[in-house]
Length: 550
Image (cartoon, rainbow, N blue to C red; front, side, top):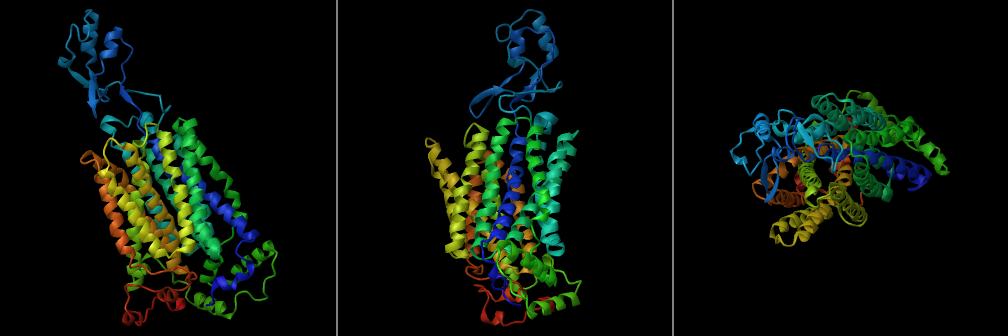
């Protein structure tokens, strides 16, 4: 089959058609930035203590009924216990005073049988205050985020295969609709269980929409525009949504209002069905040459260039006939493990993706330690991604993929290692190193989206992207638990992520290089890449998956 980029070169790289699709696909990513970290504000725990009902108590006893505890060297009201109300009421009726006539440490305590009182200094409400996810139900608070990321994980797995089978465009818009609807419906949840189920479904759509938009753009654009979209356009769209999230949360401090604001923008994108085309590359891989040619001719008309009389020549028609002769031959995740070179590439990419995702979500969810204001902390964490994505774009334009990946992994890992060496008297240096670590990891994440898409052929590209994203979401699921390791040793989470980054940097050395090469369209073209770990003898072995792809 002829090279698709050369065949469609008459369109140009940056005509009106490409500009429209570029902007619309990048805009569709913005809601993903809202949704990805909305759980930071939806599930945050306000200050709280046991509710004291309106009974006959003096003001002194009402102020003293909640015991004091010391946490991290600072006193605060106990969150899950109070002095027994009946005992305190009797002491108050006798005219006794706390601490003067009664030693409070001798009084019996009880749990919060009347519920809790939540501070509204930062939030009007969160799902924690809505469903009382505290004390004995405190485990539900981090588990809510895990449920969401489990939805993201499963969505990553199934969206790739659905997109490879049914097309990029249908899956892109279907998952966008799922994300929009199930970001709104949880507002009406009567219980935490219902909320979690709906949030899980929202996670399914969130990442599926992101991956489908990424692959669709990667296959429509060519040359430098493809690099700019996959590294800068998509990632900056996400960063814009991420930076906008704390602004929305600051003005909408009720969790239901925040969810409504997050879901509404999705409605604006659904009519774009008539403006965003199907991937011609995917249509060609399915043998639908006429449909692919129609899209390319329409693009030529929009760009005001003349298309050749025959765009896709006999080679494409032969491929179409072969595809139609084998209508039941579909590729799935097992094709990523069937041969040695593809299997090794897949395993290494999965390790790198897992490391980057674990580090990214750990550092993003850990931002509350940067500053006492959660809105400012979230914005700082989001803002550092902008220079990271610009750096990834420059690296993808001018530097080899493998070398760039190794460098940013080492930058992120070493920066996190150094945090434990910083004296506690210089907290700003720790913050700077943590943000430098996130800079490296965010840059690596942007690089890997483009790098992964460039390594796999059209028939496996979306399945590979979905599979790698699925593995990466395992990292996002364990990130909340990783933060808890700091209770045993303050720097243990940083050491863990740093170690993963260094190991992944070594493994990335064995990936093939894709810099300056056209996107592979067949499995045979993928085998023609330079694999550092494949010997000449191995390369000479025949590789047969399906004859229609050779």
